[in-house]
Image 1 (cartoon, rainbow, N blue to C red):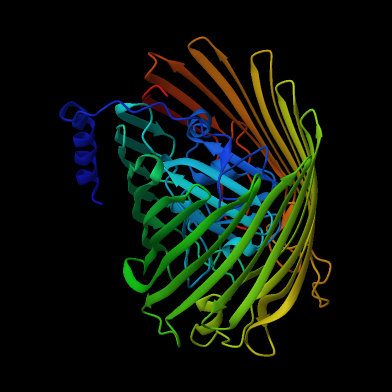
Image 2: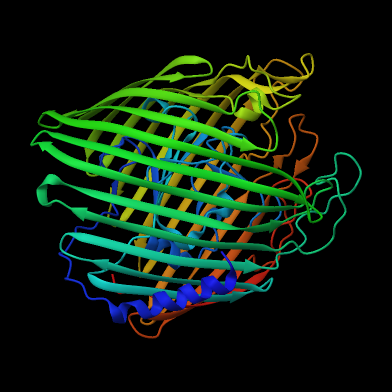
Amino acid sequence: MHRTTLYAAIAALLTLPAALRAEPAPHTPELDDVIVTATRTAVTVDDNLAPVNVITREDIERLQARSLIDLLRGLPGVSVSNNGGPGKQTSLFLRGTESDHLLVLVDGVRVGSATAGSVAFQDFPVDQIERIEVVRGPRSSLYGSEAIGGVIQIFTRRGAGQGLNSSFSATLGSYNTREATAGVGVNGERGWFNANLAHADTDGFNSCRGQVTPGAGCFADQPDDDPYRNSSVTLNGGWRFGEAGDLQAHALRAEGRSTYDGSFVNESVYREQVVGTKLRLQAHERLVVTASAGQSQDYSDNFGNGTFVSKFDTQRDNYSLQGDIGIAEHQLLSIGADYVDDQVDSTTVYDEDSRTVTGVFAQYQGSAGAHDFQASVRNDDNEQFGAHTTGGVAWGYAFGDGLRLVANYGTAFKAPTFNELYFPGFGNANLKPEESRSVEVGLRGAAGGSRWELHAFQTRVDELIAYDAALFAPNNIDEARIRGLEASWAVDFAGWTLDSSVTLLDPKNASGGANDGNILPRRARQSARVDIDRRLGAFAFGATLNAQGERYDDLGNRRRLGGYGTLDLRAEYTITPEWLVQARAVNVADHDYETAAFYNQPGRSYYVTLRYRPVR
């Protein structure tokens, strides 16, 4: 989207409220404590048996986050690596598993590149996010491939308040950063509609301190700033059929340009798009049927010094049908089917450029006295390698006074990507899925304005895909054993709000070869995050401390990346209930650190935001 066109559209949205009229919306219950990702059904956080983190729109604005990774970094079980700042390749490792062992959904639609198997976290605009649910632990028995480490679901912006509402923000900051957002929404008695625009532009900094020498990062010495641009739009709307159900639709499009350092390719023009619709019907007092369809696109045109080099465009069509049956009081049976069609369009000629996957699943949730139970099973029929079955069981026991013991066991798998299977001169069409087995026990409690959790887990991953020198191709030759301990504590005291977490991770290679016993690359073995905030009348201020232990950048553990800590400060002043001004200082100690070898990270930087938002 051209910048001038975008700013004109923003101006149009800001004037739209004067031209619209709407019926006032009825009061809707607060949903912050209800999640849907862990079980594919609505369940409260307290009743859920899986470890989960929820990030709301209020959290995003309070933290003044500039990116999706700002929100996720330091959460329990989360490790992040980034190749040089905003808009550069970013990988997320959940509970020590591989970066492609994570399923990401946007409004229920599976996203990510079918060729590389990765998700473009760096290109997802944080200003288009309403809510995030992070579920840790295997979920293949509900979702199929990729959900070995867990599932992250992103919900795009919704309208706030009743009747007609609008929002606006403008940000200026270091590295010549310019950002603007605008939105408008209508909430009526039956229907709703919301539209949001966002644009971000930054000159960035030198992303890589690489050298032409082989093995030295980006294999190029290009000491210039590496700009990044992102323009995005989201649309959400729906209609309620009274008690009979509802129909809703959504769309997200983010596009832009990213430059970086590289000897062959150093610029990409990208587009991320997600569209979908969902119909929910109360077919019977004990039966709810949900049907959904969606499509995600991951497009990338790649250039070297301004000359077109390649394109990798993938499309994933998603279809789902699910029935939730109340078989008795406190007993719920869910059965469903998913169909996914992956398609590749590239200047690289693959032996196969499409495949389909059909999955069927069933889940039981029940409770008896202080006991809660969950069991699920799923079979996926992949056009490339055939059928694969996964399962999971969970149990919880409530001791009373907010104390609960939980235990989980689950199997999961990850299907090979198109690159691993069919990339010319590299792929191996005989690859099998990567498989995992995970076990976990946890204890959590809530009392006196505080909430805490403690989880211990172990995951074994077999048939890991790695380069096999004997075949000159990828092969199922590696294994991994990952153990971890996660602790979190949140409390309100004396006007302060504190949210903290610590993760201790032991992610080891268990392949039996030369790297046996080594730490898996780019995972910090110790990490911690502390968010603390205080409001005093119209003023609010807070800080985020993020600490990461050392990590290694390679399988052989020869290239060590030192641990680091960063401190971010923030403040805001509420001018009126709708208008506020915010300021944020990032990495105030100006620490130099790397999460991937040779790739620089932001130094001390400052941002100021003027924001208009409806009163929620």
